[in-house]
Amino acid sequence: MARSFQTCDDTENAARTTQMRATEVMPDLDRIHRPASLLMFVKRSWWFPLLVFGLDVWKVDVRKTSHSDGYHVRLFVKNKIPPLYLVLIQLSLGSDPNREARNLQRIVEMKLQDWDLLYRDKLNGRGEFTSHEKRSDKRTAKKIASIIKEWNLWKLSKLSKTPLNY
Image: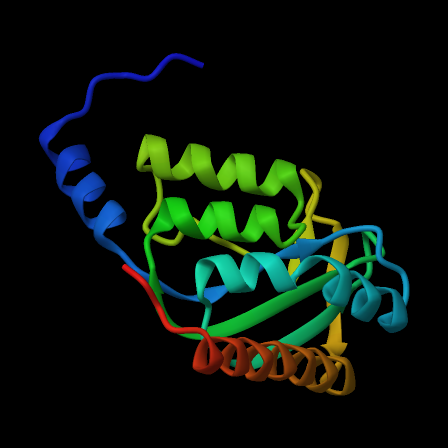
């Protein structure tokens, strides 16, 4: 799809969109069937992105989805994350690549102010529900928060023993 030239309104909207900073990271994790599988996935693949991007997570919310047999995870962070970095972070945490490609398209084309969306309910073209989030899984969220806290303590112990050379 070809990009069109921007009007003045589009330019103003683009400036606002690219200056926005997120404090919520929302990976959409598909094809993870059980909480134990989610925890194993988080332990195996999240430590490096969280370390590299220096995310300061203060709260975790986990919700099971009905359609794709997956999870919507919300990581509330103290960091202020620019939009392009947020897409990269979510992708590196295993978020649905199609969702992140659409997010990137929305940022580049400056179509929406609220471009990073997780839907609680999805409807098809006929107005029928195709997917919805189930209740919050507080137990799994607490376990993920505990895993992240362990990594942060490990990181702090390594930093305190190693002098930083710039």
